[in-house]
Image (cartoon, rainbow, N blue to C red):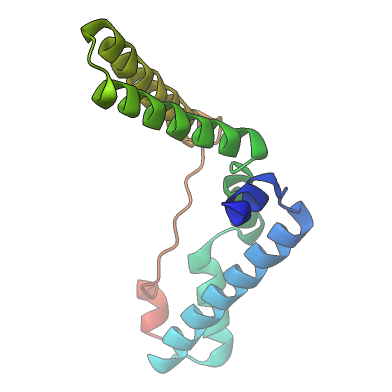
Length: 147
C-alpha cells in the first residue's frame, strides 16, 4: 500500500520522459534499419528508408511524450478515487439488508463507473485536440526493395 501511494505522488519528469521516448524511438529505427539491411539494402539506403518509413521523428516524439503526460497526478487521483468509491458502493450493496441502502451502494458504483469512463474518454486522442495519429510501419518500402 505504501509503494502504491508513493507511485501516486511521484510527478513524472518531462525531460526524463523525452529522453526515454527518444531512446525508444532510436531503438525502433535501428531495428527497422537492420531489417532492411538483412533484406539486402545497402546501409545508407536502409537508414534513409527506415527514417522515411518511420515518419517525422520530432512529431512522433512529441506525441509519445504527450501521451505519457496524460498520466498526471490529477488523473491518477481520479482513478484511485473512482476505485475506492466503487468498492465502497459494492460493500454497501452486498452487506446492506435494507433495500434503500442497497440502492445507495448501486448509485455509488454507477458514479464510480461513470467517473472512470469520463476520465478514459477525456484521454482519447481525437477528443484531446491531437489530429494526427501515431503509426509506425515496419514493412520495407516497395521502391527500396528493388534497389
